[in-house]
Length: 235
Image (cartoon, rainbow, N blue to C red):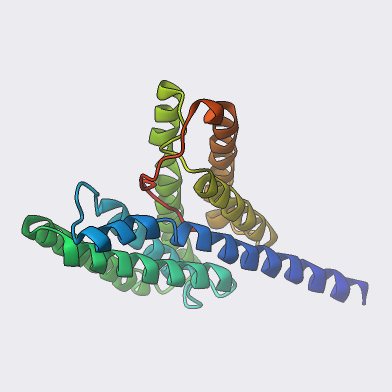
């Protein structure tokens, strides 16, 4: 009886952490909306780059595949958050292509096709691995590497904040959402004993703490700016 109760509590805490991670991820998913309002209003992508959305889509697709039951049957929350993230990124990319100049349209379309092509290769290649444990390890390593590279992207912003002593390019809500989401999926990965989740999200949590610390240290000397965050990450 005690073992059953303990196991139930354990599962509840794991799912609670996963649900919290999904909720906090919404803050990251909607972060570019201000930018796309401006694009829609001006009917131009101006100097904005579409590359962050392309890379974020690839990351979401790889992590989504890792969360599929055929790869890791106990990671439903990873599947849901990255499914939502992929939809958001695809919508952003379509809007960006719609209002980009011709040369940008072609480039973005080529990159989008490359993302789908690479994802198809990953899916097809992993399905050729008969051994379930090996298949999970291969896809898990790809997912982990993708997440770490995404979480490392704020290092440029951190360096910029330190050099300029200004947080205008590092919005508080985005840093907070990153920290809360990473921490939630760190706990989710720990409860699930999944290093492919808790390792990259542990790194994300540390970077989130650094960003928040820098924000509170430098925000008095900065003015809020409406520029777009460079990149968002999903668990």
